[in-house]
Length: 339
Ligand code: HEM
Image 1 (tube, rainbow, N blue to C red):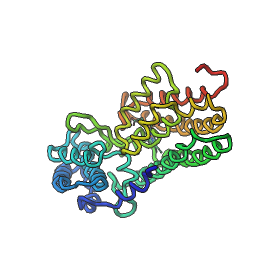
Image 2: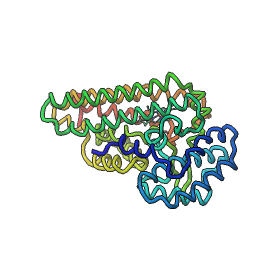
Image 3: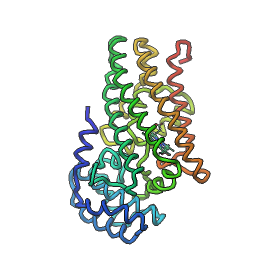
């Protein structure tokens, strides 16, 4: 199975646009809201982008051009990039086999550490945010790898041992959220960072900014919860998946596409009782992340205008629905539940 950690650490090391110095200067330009500097730098880097032909350099270039373009949109309030930048992002997206802008992978797992770190504000809180989302994504990647073997577990012992490995990673993932919750106040996140995650309109399509809905939890979610919900909730979940899968790298898109066509582990466990304790443990792990996360999102929405959206374009009602989907999967594991 492809490991995001390996692919993305290769990308993190690359600077195909020769943008290290520009990216170091980005936070200063953002403090000054220097839109002329941002536009000129974005246009200049776009010229170099045209010659990029390979996947990893295209992803590294999208990371850098994307962060500058998002900064420009944040300060101008205009979601459409300058024409030369839009053309470069389209070329890079096609070469990278990904959306034509930066994603949560660009901002986290493909973002170098140390002096080459890319950030909008160079504030300690943003570095904690990037570090924790990166570590959370690596934990999820490992969890996906172990979880993939669970449907084939031959007996209770095998299933429980695999689930224990996934459980360990999901606990780490949830702990990262708690670190962010303890460190970043809603005023800081919503007031300073959130404006740098605007939607961009590229070739007439709206692409959302890096955000949690693009994290590899989506992959694990489908492995566990596929076909667990019914009726309107199932239809809502299918649309949520379709909308967000777009932002994943190809290896994760392929895993989700496959997993959503077949019953997830919660459904499988109805027919295979030896899987039940393992699956129950993991669904409880999802809840142990989702409940405090929804509270964090609500605390942030409380300091925003009514009707504000998360960077993925959702209100917290999406988080309620995801909890409903998770609960419906949990309910499938109770012996007397209807099919
Ligand atoms: C710091 C403040 C944070 C706020 C205000 C926040 C808010 C939100 C909102 C509103 C959504 C719904 C989708 C959207 O519109 O973007 C969302 C989704 C998500 N967020 Fe966060 N989030 C925060 C931090 C984090 C952190 C640190 C993590 C991971 C460690 C995380 C992981 C997720 C995930 C995985 C989703 C997809 C929904 C799910 O699977 O339950 N978030 N977040």
